[in-house]
Amino acid sequence: MHLSGSSDQNIALRGALGGADAGGPAALAHFFNTMMLEEMNTDTYFTMIYAELNHMTGHLRMVQAGHPHPALQRADGTVTHLGAGGMPIGVFESPLFDEIDITLGPGDRLLIASDGITEATTPNGRQLGNDGLEAVMRTNAFLNGHSFLESMAWSVSEYCRGERQDDMSAVLVEFRGTGKVIRLDDG
Image (cartoon, rainbow, N blue to C red; front, side, top):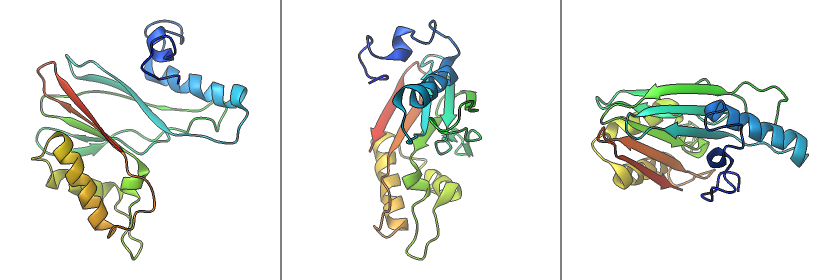
């Protein structure tokens, strides 16, 4: 609800954090952390990645709050896992969230995936991990959009022989450098 498409409910859009850029993505993570600890009175927590992307310049500001590392694949095919992790939302009173500031170049893509992908395991218990995800990304570097996500999902399913223990979800952002960004969800 707080990040819905409706501008009257979306705190990031309506400036409920104290202005248009009151601390950026990290301020949003702190808002949710305070809400979880003070208002909801629950023992649950969540992880998140929240990003603000300038689709004209490729500048990306992101907060990582306990969520798996986003994978940045540059146009040359190299893959880098971003961030240090940060703390989950709703656990600590004074958390440290990982703030990431990067610029995407033409042909770059950013993959934000759930732990169901990196923690996919073979029948003998070996996890795919970040190295395996990098291999999948490099193998499928020639694909774009939905084709990339479908091939990635197929590769992960093959890796774990169809025995998934967790959900698999991902968001793919491809920067074309023309002021157009394609964002695809697969979940």
